[in-house]
Image 1: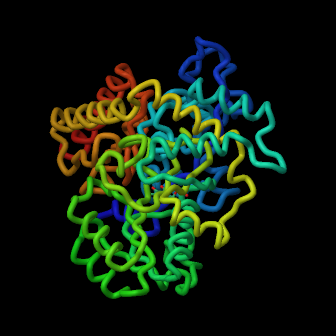
Image 2: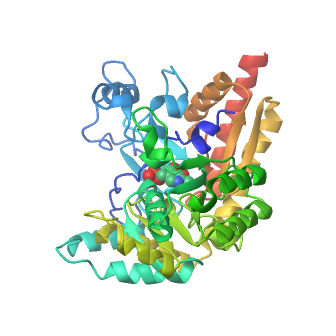
Length: 450
Ligand SMILES: Cc1ncc(COP(=O)(O)O)c(C=O)c1O
């Protein structure tokens, strides 16, 4: 199935956090939609050539940026399908769950920056915290005290966390868990299941020397026999089992118990990649939701509502190995992103954010299922779990056409990967999503079956 390209193949193309949005000017800041006075989009082409300005930006991107985007999932082909010629690829403003394109379209975003934003774009609490950190000086020759405060808070909310190291991206954080596990055990072999980012240890892409991942054995999601075989083969060389705990669905308890049993029996480290699940299923990720603790875990994405920071957390006795190897990045603990994490933690303290994400995701899935049923569309189903769900298509052509029609109706759905619920998807937006999906499915049915 095509989804494996994104979810399990080690060749995924997943996000980096977006640029910090402009702070709202005042309480009445709108959702980023043009107000019709003509000044909304400074510095943006007027489209007087008769060409859709959104497509002009797409063309410019293709000239100056290989592939058209630095984040794989934001390439035109990833957004809309191979060889498509429609659809906006860039935005100028984002607020709540709405984005505004250079051409003046306002879209409800169901992708939420590939799951890195679970509150909403330009959230006031977080934006204010980040701006304050910037104004106070967010880096120096010494570490900022917020590194300690935020690490302490993460230890409060993440079950397996006794110590924390910060990095910038999800890929770095997972790579660091592997480095720590190898340093701790003095062994090399890793058994892995999931998508872990673009770095050499986790990829067999063109340009990666085979030796870089020669000690990594891939096993399918939730396959106990394959896991047992791989661990047995690794024998006394097994350093870690690294698992992405949710891939399209929740894992079976038996699979996780097998992983724990094998790690314990062989003296290896059990790692969860909670980059997508952290601060989404529960603040503490799958390990809190499923009450199943790994030894180490990687967090990122929703932890900072789109600001660039990730965390390696885990048991102190294992994390200590970080001091005996080398894991470091110049800006790993800059205080703007730490302030964003503090803002997210504050919001989770004040409200049951994750409960809302589950409820909202269920409503999104229900809306789209109703739209499918009412239109009579065939070959498409709504799958996944509520906070991270996806559309599964039999026909890539129908998927592309649906995405185009949905964008025309003002909604951006994710092609071939998850749509993510956010706090910003309110009742009004859910109605907009259902309306757009209904109209798009009806038209698709007319075109393909009429
Ligand atoms: C489960 C998982 N791990 C790791 C990564 C890599 O994170 P990043 O793209 O921030 O490097 C991703 C990205 O989508 C992910 O979903």
